[in-house]
Length: 286
Ligand SMILES: C[S@@+](CC[C@H](N)C(=O)[O-])C[C@H]1O[C@@H](n2cnc3c(N)ncnc32)[C@H](O)[C@@H]1O
Image 1 (cartoon, rainbow, N blue to C red):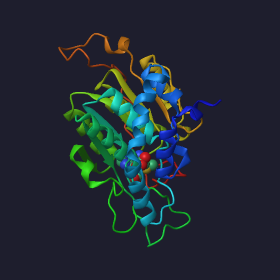
Image 2: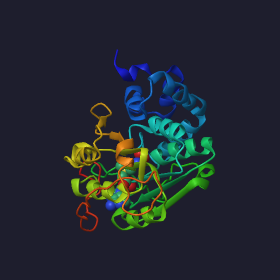
Image 3: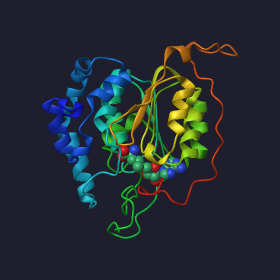
Image 4: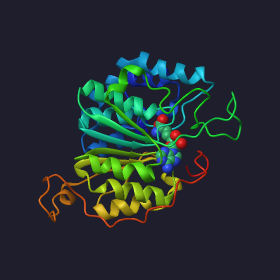
């Protein structure tokens, strides 16, 4: 039986309420990322069954703007579970759009009663009342702003920054003591992914998780990063979503100056890409 069929029935109800079967969670992938037996993870994953109203509300918001399905990340329930189990102090995501990934991270942080989500998004805007055939569904419908599907009651733990991650990510990372979960879902080019991974690397700790979506568009950037950390790349089926968990050996590499013990990762800086590409559409690499 395929791994994804193993999700508990309550989770299937949440998937149905959100209205997109792509979001059926991949337990085996989660188990690999967390290095725990699937049975331990299932207990936490099952919590999403308690939030049918939340999922329906996200779907309702999309439908009200003429969007039959949300713009991207296929793993909102895995994100919820990762945040519940890691209990991160700081999560960074690049690429928000309507905010399906953000909403699920924020829901888990609210349940944890601790932690902040720092999101960076450079939005594009829908040109007319209806989404044109050639327009990307990541663009904002008229009258909407980044994160338009995120319920207001979850925004207390949200540090949302609007602008290109080329400019905002280095500044944000410089402000944080650590990053326990990083998600790349912004401009999907090899150079940009390498830039984001390189920028965040110094704040990752042993046990931190790094995720990147649409790696089918970003060449070997993620694989090279993983190789430098000596960690395997864990792929969520053929969806292009990949992840790794930072290992303790990388975290124990001797610091060059006194620094918190859990700080990691010595890694060569990647070249900074030029200013944001004009093309930021799904379907083209952004
Ligand atoms: C695929 S969507 C994000 C989907 C979101 N993670 C989710 O699961 O709901 C990508 C977003 O990244 C934004 N983006 C593109 N280039 C960017 C850049 N250089 N910096 C920040 N955001 C960017 C796009 O405009 C879009 O809003």
